[in-house]
Length: 322
Ligand code: GH3
Ligand code: MG
Ligand code: MG
Ligand code: MG
Image: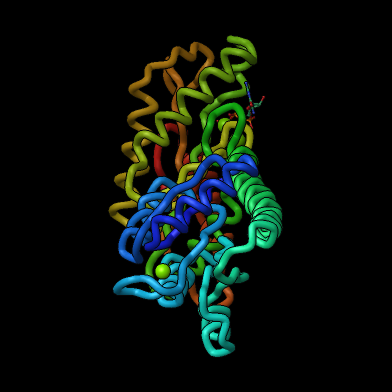
C-alpha cells in the first residue's frame, strides 16, 4: 500500500514515518507543499497507479490542505483514494469544509499514535476493498470485450460460405434487404447478377466431386476479385450458383461487370471435356437493374436476374443476358 504524506513540518513527517513504518507500512512518499503533492500524484497517475492513502496537512504554505483535497478529488478524480486530513484546528467550519472537499477522515494534532494507527488501518482496509472491486470491474470489462470479439467472429463465421469463403445465402438475404431499402430511399438503381456454372453436373460426373469443389473455389475467388467497388457484394447463392449485388450502378455498368466476370472465368481455362459449350468451364450470367418502385423489394430484381439467367442458358450458355 502506497501512502503519501503531505506536511510542511519536518518533525511531523519524521514522526508519521516512524509510526507508519513500525506498522510495516513501508511504501511512504513525502511532499512538503501542494504543488509537490499534486505533481507526485500526477506522475503516479501517468503510470496508471494511484496512492492508496493520502495524509494531508491542512495548514500549508501557498495552497491549504482543503484546496489540495478538492483538486485531488475533482480534477485528479481520486474518488476511490481515501484522504485523511491532519489538522491542528478542530473547529466545526474547517472540518465541514474538509469533508465537503472529499476528505474521508481527520486526525488532530498533537497526533495520538493509537488514533493514527486505527484511522490509517481502517482507511487502508476500505481501500483494499475498493481495489478488489476495481480489479473485478476491470476483469469484467476485459471479459465483456472478449465476448464481444468472439461474438463478432461467430457472426462473421455464420455469414461465410465454408467452401468458397464468399458471403453465404443467409448474409446475402440480409444484405439485399438493406441495400434495396437504401437504394429505394436514395432513388438509385440496384443491380443484381445471377451467375451459374454451365454443365456443372457433367463436370462433377467426369472429374469427381473434389475437383468440382476446387472448381467452385476458383470461380468464387475470380468473382470476388473482379467485383471491387466498395458496397458491391458477391455471395454463394447455393450449389454452383453465385449472386452479386451492385448498388447504384447503371445498365451499362452492370453489363460490363458481368462480362468481365464471365470472361475472367473463361480465361481460367479450367478443362471441361464434357461441356457442350467449350472445352473449359464457363458460366452463364443473368443481369437485372432497376429502381425499386413501391411495394418492390430486392427479391423483385433477383427474380428478374434469374429470368435473364434462364434466357442465357436457353440462348446457348457462356453469355450474359440483361
Ligand atoms: P446448367 O448449365 O444448366 O447450369 O447445368 P448444370 O449441370 O450446371 O446444372 P444442374 O443444376 O443440373 O447441376 C448442378 C450441379 O452442381 C449438380 C451438383 O452436383 C453440383 N453442385 C452443387 N453444389 C456443389 C458443391 O458444393 N460441390 C460440387 N462439387 N458440386 C456441386
Ligand atoms: Mg502545516
Ligand atoms: Mg449450372
Ligand atoms: Mg444451377
